[in-house]
Image (tube, rainbow, N blue to C red; front, top):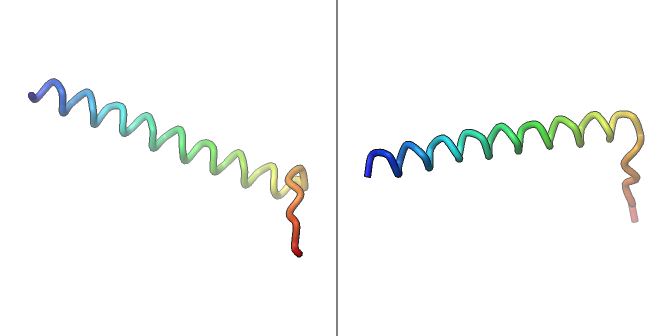
Length: 40
């Protein structure tokens, strides 16, 4: 049980890090104007 929880928490940490990384990349691309935003 402890091993299962440990594995889940580790995967969650990796998932959170990946999400933060994706948000940073999106923000950088948005600032560079690569992302086109429709304002209709």
